[in-house]
Image (cartoon, rainbow, N blue to C red; front, side, top):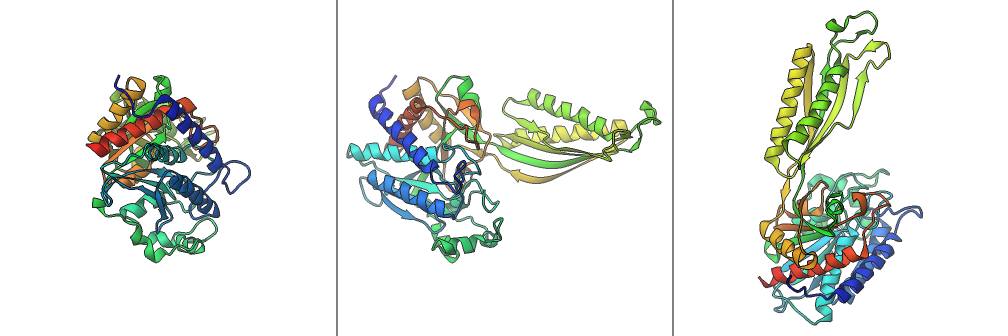
Length: 419
């Protein structure tokens, strides 16, 4: 096993600091009960200020950009060199856990802290960004922070209202930001070499393999559809079984097929029927119409499309055989985001160095890396999270895992910056 740059003792202190800082940020919440910190809130201002102090303590020059992301730069050996950008988000869902997003920003600071303590400069600058909005909790639009950096904010976003009718533009004004200056947050493609993000795993794979760290291959693409079987309602007592056009029986047959076919096709694909409603919905009436939702996800778009098309073909076939009609309408789609091969290799090598072996796995949840991948190569490192629970106060990571995470992160950063 090759030797990692950061000693076990250094990694232990770095991890203890990360955990303490996660606790400190968790105290910055709009409610006493639980953790809620949303975009363009007084809490965001306080969190940004704390994170900026920690960046400065690690030898970084800091600034807040035009959309409210907190940014820091640790200069390269030759000033003005392009940067390796590390980051994640500082906003949360309502009643959140304390690691989703925050862990990535604070671990990134520790990699720079080590370089600063050892008076080392790399051929590339290291920049860190704490994104102001990934979750979309307040305005119902997501990735506002990272889309600021990529320069892909739709015009319409500034007039988007929150639950109290306050628009993004007004909320920005309240914090001394100017919506007219949003384009200034966009970074030149040539300024940044790549984007890396450390994040808790929001699933159980690492825990099942008894590993602290894994390397993300891709962020799942998703399709969401509203589906409908229409048959014929009728009296539950008088219509013989052979004459029925039962929409619920058809939907049930299809749901079992959805589960089975998805399992058979590819271990990385998932499909969920999450809602179901029956009309007329009476105990003594044959269901004449059923509306149900379908959510399919996977790390590659082609297998995902194949699965979806086979599921819909089967729904048509079930309907036809039973004398019903089936229709489906797709209302949401996001393409899969592949992580860059070279970045995956660098992260895998670093993970092997600190834990003996690496595990490659897809991400079922979305991340800032989705937006960043439109401009730069992206790589992601996952840290084990108890039972894969996230978006919940029960999120839990171990200090020892974070120590390995910081060690691997530093290793990957140095390897990439020097190659």
